Length: 223
Image (cartoon, rainbow, N blue to C red):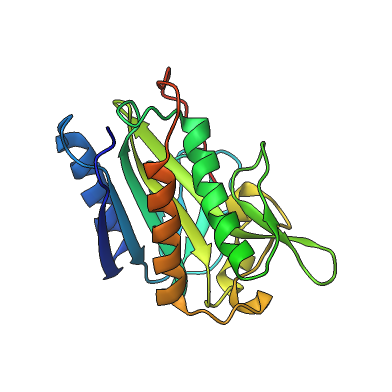
């Protein structure tokens, strides 16, 4: 039987210390430890994942670039972005990594649909995408996961009401020319708190309804 998720609302946290806290949690957790969702927000930071080859580093020194152990390439975090970290025992939850990625993407798609915005996911480029008024595609949410000992950490970021200009200094998630958008620019009036709580509710319901086969490997899917 699935154990209830523990939900922690952390407020504004430093990216590096939060990553270290997730690593400790994953290393020290026992088979009986409940899974957790951490809702947070970070000061401006570029996050550089494990796939660092041919990454265009940001040419600005006012925002730090921090190496992290999640998969994927490079992204930006800053105030006005909802972040949910998922600390889950995949084997106990009967989740494989592909189903977890789909669960996270579908949660964001469901949230956006509730506000009248159609969104979609891609098999070969994890994250959530929307069509802008000019018919161009833009990314609104990113995923980045790490799996160790059949348990995962890191999670997702959803742009809500932030300064998007730092994305212009990088190739978001490694894709040159990829446009980035946010819920505010799509006409969604809900603020950070409302969006965060709604996303937590959807994710919690998704984990409660898990009907997945056992995980068979330590695949990772990112960004």
